[in-house]
Length: 535
Image (spheres, helix red, strand yellow):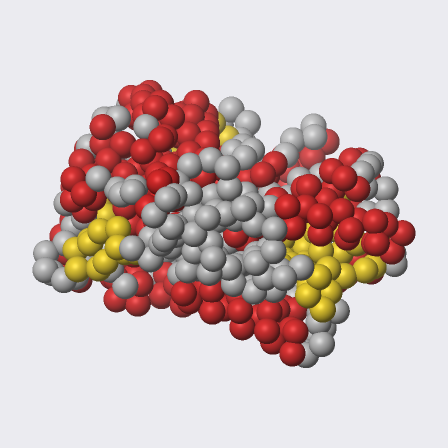
């Protein structure tokens, strides 16, 4: 396939193409959102639309003094918020859920303009944020109340476990999911009584600010969620140095720096980092469905997902048949810079991302890999578009073999037996997401347990685990530590306190017993508890 073949998309520069040539974000909306940033530097950052390269708006940058002031305001608000009954906190999240769904058209426009993703993939953010808010509103109370635990001696020792908010939670959110990754960690944190100090990525800060505005409209105290904007190397350390727990989503290299700084302060950190995610297509897979699932797994959001598939292992028995169907799927995907539904693949977010994709593919091509489809930029669609690309013959000396590309590029490999496929899928430093496509879901689930990664989707690419909010999500090894979603997603924001009350008899020799007699009595008691099957 040539770089530009078979695409019905129209260049956004075409004056006949109304949906992009005449569309613009409301400047009043940009100013209103930008005014909520804690910033007094009088320095400004301009963001540009990936679809067109046109400026979207300017955001004032925060300085160290702004971060310190924002942290102080958030801590003061948190002291009062922690006393708010849990059902009232839940009401705020449920109102936010409703507002997200009601305002989705304007929000989808904003996400598309800032990130360049296709609208159907922008909607994933709407759905995920709404589901997260509803989940923690409905389940949070179960994790926040006091709990009785077994004491040392039945009836004589009472133990109560209390959970208290950590205080101020830092969130450093990425550009690739600018709305839901900006908000979802924080939703669990505020449900558990914490305040937020938030630094969104500079390219996509308006989407994050829109979400914060909806939370305030839903009833969240204005000072409880503070937003600061600025370059990561400048503002990020200032955030880490002022919070009691840190949530970071980004690259593994930056994640290591974040973890080191957090460890120096002895605070917890939840880090979702990079991935080189494998998909296994087994010999019994339903090939038409498998090809469609694989295309979505590889090319949704132009491959700019931490959980996107970049390595595709296919059983020898079905290799040619599957690859043929997969290439048909890849070639049929519609690239478009339209604001609205219809596109299958959107733009890369920046020139830096485009340069990385070009570098990876050209390095592989130069060293002998074969490009089965795609393989080049699509400037006819927009300045940062790249064709969905399938490579074969990728070897370890090629950059894209082990490095995360984070673009619409996948390498296809054969495997002879499943033990070999599992071994190759587990190779490398990452362990975020994996997929198994099979006609036998039970066998797929059994095989999933042999993969060293935080989530595995059977007969799906990423949506089944990502959209199941009760399921924890996060990485192993170089893909991070900690979990968002599920009970684990709220428990990380709580400090645990045990209160033990001893009744009647103290835990020491009593009734004139010598120390030796006390030890003998204790030994007999422990043996009795063992026979009674006590924990």
